[in-house]
Length: 564
Image 1: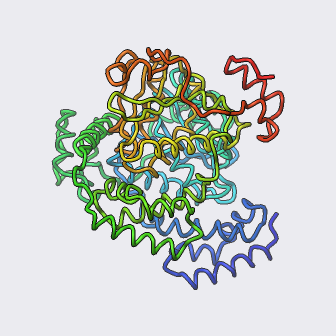
Image 2: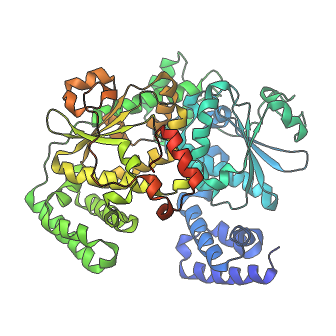
Image 3: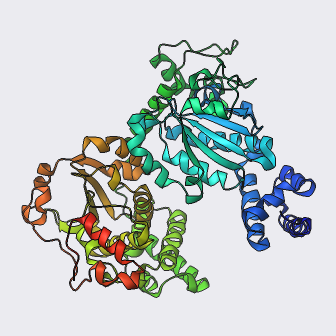
């Protein structure tokens, strides 16, 4: 229980924050904070009654709500098809707890509508959270007949981020009727979740729902008696919302014609019940990819010497103001090496402001993440042996990694991420202005070798090395990983998607000499190009805080003998 004096004290403190920064907060949230206990108490409970952390959390949440426009949208702000095909509806369990249902089988990622999807998710969260109050709510994910392409990692990530702004709201996550086709990939999805959300997951079959929810409340598709979805009144089809959603009318026409449907005339906006919104998403996705490949041509406009000098001077002024946020090594490079400035102008089409902001983000991250604080010998020899570096026939460096030997070891904590960042910095310095190729040897790999968290980390930090990565080669991808690759591609940014190609190992000899390729990829090289005097993990166990039992399991997984 939280004492009322704690709540009042935090309320008064936040009132001063609102008074200082009134434009950052919405009037509806301000009214709730002044009149209700729960909008304050939930932050104290979630943060173990620590007033300072609770205050910071409130500040972050209520500013986000205002900025994201939580109170600026109604049910009618979203197309009827969003409600119908997402299957979102709110019911109550036998004990009175609210349950928000979401149907996955019709969902498909559409970059063109991504922001609207985020707004829809946030709107539904706000809606069920207000209904549930202090009792919290259950998120029921209907996985019946879902396929791997129905999994949208960007949307899952946004749901987690948004749910963080509703502390103690989400109480449980029910995954119902998980089909066999996505069971092998479910651990990957679960691993992608924030830890606190993983522990909320329960796997159920539809018949088990009868223990918690009246049969009359449960949709027929989940074994209940209710035939019709609980409809939202006053919503309009997507076709009638084209202008307000900023959709091109001509594109909407093309989509209706593709499905052999008559577009409803403006005077009679009736629902189009035959519209298959899952396919609609698919076609939007097609047009989006067409746009990506059209825009992916290399920008041949080289930055001028004047623009480089101007950006460098501007950034040196930034360093002077905030010297503690940048590492001396990066500062020296920016002063002495043209590439450390030009690469940003090259990446961002000569836009000085965007390039400047990207430089701030990049070099602050390098200092904060300790890029220059780690050396080659700080990482176990076995990690290095999972990777290799070669050169293409044209001289381009090729960073290779074998997927099949990778496994998630929670005992290693942040070490794999530190190694990835170290390797990226290393290959970037070696490649310089020529850039490098990333080669992923997927032969013999399976779902257990996939760590979505690490993959996403790598694809995120590579943005801090602009104009460096030239191509991503996925080699010998086994059929069992096709669905996983679809998921991975879904959260790559457009530029990375345009770099991605699939190849067979025998095709690599057209771009690389045999002596540059390991034998596993059809080459003749038997030893990887790695630094000398590296230390095995077994000899670093104490330093890394690893138990003897873990070290044994590590070597057993790699199928190599533990060093004496």
